[in-house]
Length: 350
Length: 96
Image 1: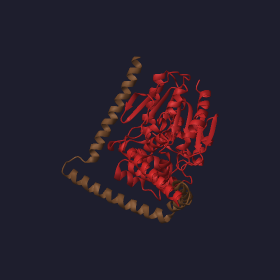
Image 2 (image 1 turned 180 degrees about the vertical axis):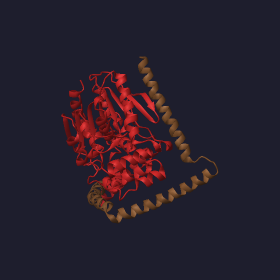
Image 3 (image 1 turned 60 degrees about the horizontal axis):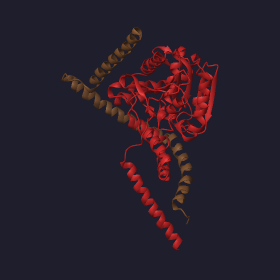
Image 4 (image 1 turned 45 degrees about the horizontal axis):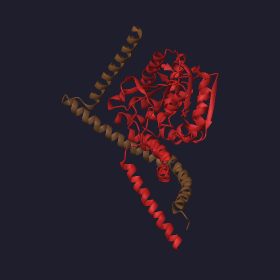
């Protein structure tokens, strides 16, 4: 009898202590993110181009990281030890990143064409001018990978290597996002006409609905990690990024949804940017296409198809265990994927 | 009663999560969910657009700039600023 009540009492005291810790976390400062030292080299409108200088540069060819336009850039520089940018800098690469910024109401008129053929093209130009090189490595994550792929097809002469991380290419897959975004289910024109930009809160709510039990699961994870400061900090940093949604420029969002999700033009080489057809076969650079086996945002098949469509003679498909985020910046990624990425890049960055 | 009640609840949660996820996935694909959602979204956006159009027409009738007008002006200014930055960069490059 006594041991039972002792367990209950000890469990209750432990629970109270944890609740106290949780409350302290809630009222405390947010997790620190984007800690790798960087400098702003160029800005236009809300965009910033950041450079992470390497003290021991080994590889002369620069790498431009292209994050998604629907999330914050710092997923690729999450926190010390979990920063892909920091890892690449430590391995001797000259790393740059595009911070797309947070669109204001006036940016509803900014188009996808401007993102790719304007902002991204200018960033590539700045990197090449500053480094004195004539080509660079483009590394795109999620929709950033879509932008990088399109750019590589339109301007192959400036792209030395293309790395795509969990990047959807065939948008008519069996994922929920693909189903919801179809013309018969999603009135994108009405939404953009009414709101201007695609609101961050609506994007966030949609992604949460993709996995309705994840908030509960996250609560458990948080509860379990309260006694492990390092893993707790990892969780809080990642959760900060997940909750830190970004609005998307209205016209860019409209074109992305219509051309990609509804008409699936990219995979048919029928998408047009500034009047030019995007033919993925024009991608000539060595390609590393990284897909995640449990990705519910860019399902494996949707992403893997790029290897068949790109014109690259040197094309590698790397399939990782994990989901859309975990496979790229999770604990296993740090130990397994990042060193493999480094090995692939090192061979091609002389 | 297990030694650690929290672990017991965790194992219950893990057991519940997989079927719950499968259930939600099926439910969120179902026409029973998608069709009413589309209708609700359509009517809500149509109402919002109608109100916006009415408000804009009223403001224009009084010779006032609408929010959309201000946004367009700001957008044009941003475009000019961007072009100037790009030109400036090219000039710097040419100047060495």
